Every structure is written in C-alpha cells, then in structure tokens.
Length: 197
View 1 (cartoon, one colour):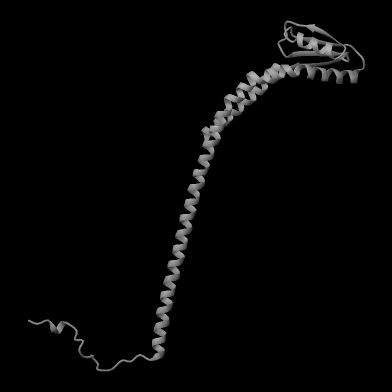
View 2 (cartoon, rainbow, N blue to C red; view 1 turned 90 degrees about the vertical axis):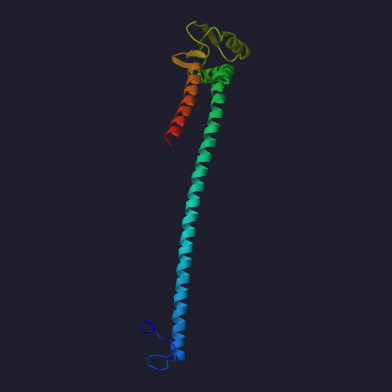
C-alpha cells in the first residue's frame, strides 16, 4: 500500500496561482527583519552590560573585603609589635626621664609660687632617694629659697611643696602608672575590637 496520498506534492501549486512579492512588501519584510535583528542585538548588549556591571561590582566588593582584611591584619601586626616597645618605655625610659625632669619641674613650680606668694621660704618634702638630686638643684639655683625635708614614707618621685598657705604635690609614680594603664587599656580595647569583628 502506498502512502503518497499522505504526503504533500510540491511539484505543482495546489491552486495553480502564482504568488508575487511586490517591492513594497519586500521592503516591509526587510525592515521588519532588520528591526527584529536590531532589537535582539540591543537586548543582548544590555544583558551583556548588566552582566559585566554585576561581575565588576562583585569583584570590587571582593577586592574591598580582601583589602579590609589585609589592612586589619597589618594594623594588628603593627599594634602587637608596638605593645612591647611602649610597655618597656613606661617601665624603663619614662621613669628615668621623669626622675631627670623632676628637678627642673620643681624649680619651675617654685619660681611660679614665689612670684605669686612673694619672698616666702618654701618647704620641700621629698623621699630620701630624691634628696641628693634636689639638694644639688638648690645649691645651683640661688634664687630658690627652700628647706628640704626628707620623709621615709614618700617614694621616689613624690614631692610636696609648701609655700605659705599654698601646697602642691608631684607624684611621678602616679603619672607613670596612669600612662602605663592608658597604654594597656588601649591595647586591651584594640584586642577586644579585633575579637568582635
């Protein structure tokens, strides 16, 4: 049995009419095809641009995160390297500098107090350890009229000045302890801040 009756015959047109395309309809078809192709190209370009923008944004975000992590690592390393140096300064260098500056600071305070109170004799109560240095100060500066009183209850760097009714206290140990506490507090806070991020 043949199946030719099921297949279409292309040899002859079924209605035997000839179809023709006019120049106008051909131009319309070309214009439609051009616009369709142009729109498809435009859509592809917009999609590609959006994909590029998303990729660039993601890359930038990753780079910023890497940069932030690198900065935090560098900052942490610098802080950890500085900590022993600063702590050693508070225990070694600053006490020596404070002791060396005690005499000049005391002389400055005595001059200021004498200018305000007149020519009264000052009393300086000091620790026995500071006595040689301050005795030398009084001997080298004749403008300072003061009596040194040694007190065993005072530690190095503790001085009490009395001029008439005015009293002042110098406590280098307390100042150094405050500096040491501030430095340790700074590093503790930095460490806590690093742990919370």
